[in-house]
Image 1 (cartoon, one colour):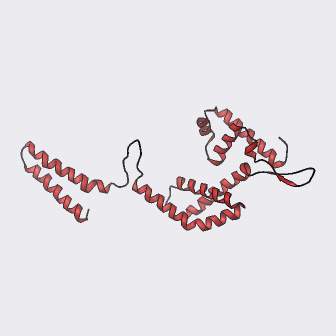
Image 2: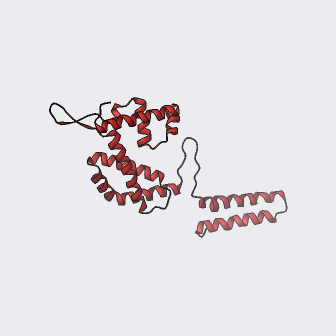
Amino acid sequence: MLQPKRLIAFVAALVLIVAGWVIPTPFGLIPMGLGVAVLMVAILLPSVHDIEFGFPSGVKVSATLKDREEKLRAVFERQKGDLELCANLICDDPATAAMLLEAAWVKTSSDWRGPITSGIRTYTLCIFVDRFISHMKWAQPQQRIDRQSKEVVPSSSPLATLSPHERVVVVLHEFASLSLAEIASLTGSPLAQVVESLQHAETSVARMHSGEVS
């Protein structure tokens, strides 16, 4: 409001409104309308910067949300070295660690609603650990001992042993953090079938980890 251009526009708008007010004829509405329009365009609309309007073909992101995303990304970049160190110490495979850390950060930036503080680091690590545990349980190739050579050889990951429906349920539940009701809606399956698929998958992976043959 104190910027010279806005101050001049504000004064001009007031002059038009007052001029229209003192004209005792219907024509007085013309300068009044112009004054109100100038006031809205030059003074009020620039102040409303938190919300931007778009069309169905492309909704604009508000300036406030853009600023928040940039601040979140800046925090991540500052903490990236420390986060990568922790990720690589937890996960032996650097490529997997990088993939899980990026996924954890994407979820953090989507979920975080509080002030942008160093607490984001702890939240990101919690998400990373959760993703790492799911990866080790479901996606990491298992190992078995060959009975003839007595050598340890890799076998399929638990996910590879599941049926397509069970695999979808596990991935959406364990990695995408969807509820069973959401999975049922997404896949068009009865909730009971989704529950049964997850239970069967859990049983199968428990047998694999214990060395039993399913």
